[in-house]
Length: 241
Ligand code: PGA
Image (cartoon, rainbow, N blue to C red; front, top):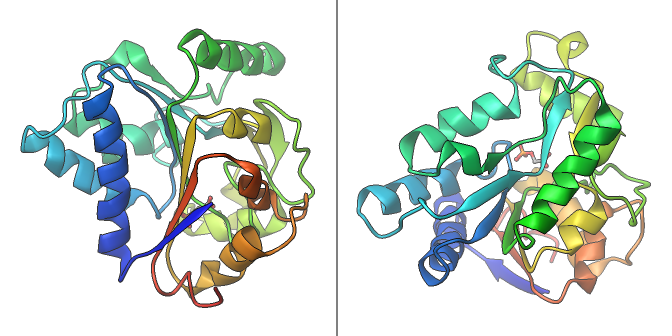
């Protein structure tokens, strides 16, 4: 596990964007694993800048998002479908048919999860997976007491996650209580993973991820076993390292 401590959020975002863009420059048809939340917003902005400056071309890439609320309509501004379009896809040239985000209204969840997993395999697996981390150590929506063997599946959101994400909704009651998420096994099968974290609120989770024991209570701790994991943090998130 490689840990990079950036001076601030902007530097963290720039470093992450360099990792993603160099992946795409070196392999035009890269498969990118993408994340939502506040943390990667700066990285998306940097990637959009690189695209506008013609430094990187996304026309060959395929993308898979980590997760999506269930049930939520794509048109809902809180859906991750909406977020991705609004914060990234509408500004760059990723082809529509190469964008994969779990369907938050799928009728047959098991089929949706199986198909999602199959599509990732059909495209040759994820070359680089971007991750945020919850203050509770979750990655994707893989909450504490995680099953390390799980692939894409329906998850029940942790109380802490519902609390944290209620800032985006009118009230806590509106936050969906379940989601479709890549499992830890899916994430671990990515060729490279890059986890981003900023702010002191993430310091404890980062400490446990990097220096703690590998345990289901801290889902991100499994990344210690990944052969190519990079953690990019700002000084706040690195406070306890
Ligand atoms: P955040 O969420 O980027 O909005 O802090 C990260 C996460 O919960 O995984």
